[in-house]
Image 1 (cartoon, rainbow, N blue to C red):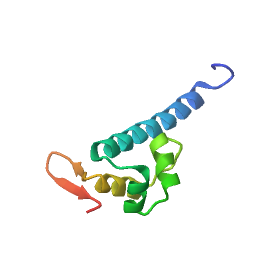
Image 2: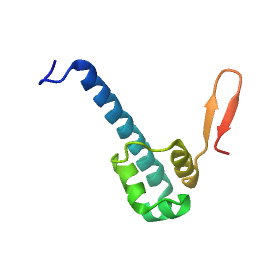
Image 3: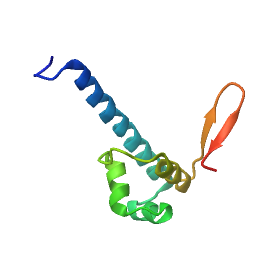
Length: 92
């Protein structure tokens, strides 16, 4: 226990926060590379500026993969699943 919290709960909380942080940093980088504002991106992907701002800041805890793919596409990126034998476009 650390400060009254069981260690597995601390790890679970950290893992969840870290994943949200990584996604928000990735979206921030995509937006910066493409020069997109929150309002521009929101309009292109059909989300409210508030949702985009929450995603960008890491406050949005449950981003849908569809929203992530749409944001990446709006910023000029394409996503692929790749293994040794094939490459599959995601959301195309």
